[in-house]
Image (tube, rainbow, N blue to C red):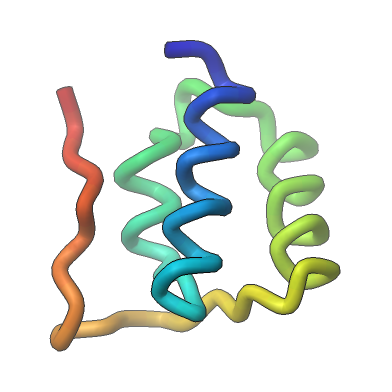
Length: 67
């Protein structure tokens, strides 16, 4: 799966749950697989779409996992 597909799924999950956690983002897109500038663009897109990024959610487990 390429970055654009992963990002689309991440955004969809954020829309469904109403937010994303930093943990979900970093588990889904490990830092070594994405440039810092691309991560900044993702954060900007999420903000523009009204999807907040929160520190941690113990109530909602992530649907993503590392391979």
